[in-house]
Length: 192
Image 1: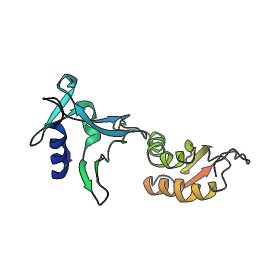
Image 2: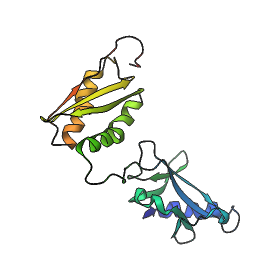
Image 3: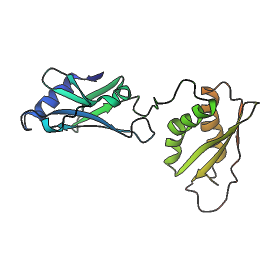
Image 4: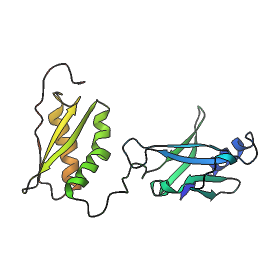
């Protein structure tokens, strides 16, 4: 479930010695299954253990996880990285942003909308922009629309070809071309 390195386990054991008796560790995800998912580790006092929690046993402590987020923690790892400056606890949860509520029978449009939200929009949001799918025609042409900082950006042609179209064509063989129908406004409203 959660692979905790030997260094991280020793670190947790050491930290728990300074906490009240019975305190354990909690791993949580805020906004699981969304592009905004954030993972965390915290102390879990006995009085904060919930009925929906699963207790994962390690050598000298338990890790509590709400059973509703277990699928998002598949192949997750906790490690203690030590370098010349100090140490840092890291938590990697590769499935934290996956939308498991999608049915396998989702339409192509739904799959692409989800893909854009999970794989493309997080990059575009760093510049205040986003992209959304408008439609897919019978010839496999996906029509998209940019918004926010992408509207009118001088780099939009490159973003369209090297990011959006490239990723969509690689992930969805049904798509043959991507068309941008944004009415790009030129001016100072874009970030770049």
